[in-house]
Amino acid sequence: MTAVSSELLRRFDVPGPRYTSYPTADRFVEAFGQDDYALALEQRRLGSMTKALPLSLYVHIPFCESLCYYCACNKIITKHHDRAEVYLRYLSREIDLHTAHCGTGQVVSQLHLGGGTPTFLSDDGLRELMAMLQRSFSLAPGGEYSIEVDPRTVNADRLAVLAELGFNRLSFGVQDFDPEVQKAVHRVQPAEQVFSLVESARALGFESINVDLIYGLPRQTPESFDRTLAQVVQLRPDRIALYAYAHLPERFKPQRRIISAELPSAAGKVSMLSRSLDAFLEAGYVYVGMDHFALPEDALAVAKRQGRLHRNFQGYSTQPDCDLIGLGVSAIGRVGATYSQNAKTLDDYYDLLNQGRLPVVRGLALTRDDLVRRAVIMALMCQGELLFEPMEQAWLIDFRKYFAAELEQLEDMAEQGLVTISEDGVVVTAMGWFFVRGIAMVFDRYLQADRNRARFSRII
Image 1 (cartoon, rainbow, N blue to C red):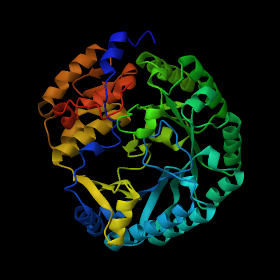
Image 2 (cartoon, one colour; image 1 turned 90 degrees about the vertical axis):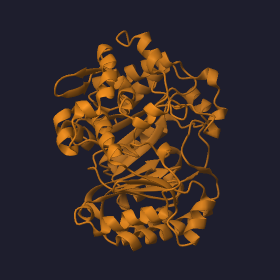
Image 3 (spheres, rainbow, N blue to C red; image 1 turned 60 degrees about the vertical axis):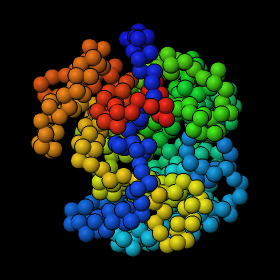
């Protein structure tokens, strides 16, 4: 911790994007609608290059049985499971509208079910969903098929059903093992329950098991989080996603139930991040990037070593830079040089589908400058280095001239030890990884022009 000065902490205790996309989703506009998205799908179908590339699918299941106070996801709290049956019928309509534009049998090499709580669906509901997807798309052998799992909603028998349906990767939402923290965020789940489920998942042959953790939650301290870290190291999942809690109660109503005075300080959060890095690296994990760790043999760590790491709306990914179709309420997709997002409420989502329309309500067609800057930001976020010559060849620009103002801003970061700048490019230092979002923000044209950043989580 002594290497991270209080001056740096104060300077970077500011809001900023996570850059799961660039431009970020807050830049989407309603002028981009279902007709624009349908055109992008048609262009994919007709393009000889793009249609040969495998797709990534994301399906959003919005339902949860209970409310977690920290949650910023689009979710619906209900114990009425019959609502999921109606939702599946509308998902089927949305899938049919997609295949009407891009054709059936498109190859899919990555599928992710998120939420909400995907395991809110019954076993029969999950079977129905997978059958719908398999009728319309071709799921490639050896692809990555993952699902987010609330440990409170499954047992060993349910995990066996997931394996039977073709899922080969699980992500367990843990957040913190400390009982007091769990009470403070209204998510009580004994560590023994998670350990038992991971043991069952391994026996069933799942290829990769991820555990989600959050630092910066109420009642957390660096010392209490050390105990959670020790338990996670003992659990030894294949991947660990470690997220900083984003406290934005003005945007997310559930977070108003969190007592702000119980939140750790910025220095405490950085201490937790620093201790997490030490604990996981000492345990043999590879630091993949901003929020991901993986065991050396895991596909994510292999992609990091080979320079094949990418970043999409779910975070770091091994999937090549490919099109992503988002299905379900509020789902975000990327097709060609466009981003799109579905209606955020069930009523609006159902209404558009009842009209026979794709439920896209906003999005963005990327400009050439957007594409150049996206390439720069993703290079920093994924590889931790930005080489000038490949960028110049790929985009036909004079990098130093195009980004003269940005490189000038980086000089100050270089003096702080966050990056090194040479004739060949920019490299993020070990300390710079703590602040990689801040480094990427230098190249964000929208953010530099708009200083109102309160809509984002804080970097630290």
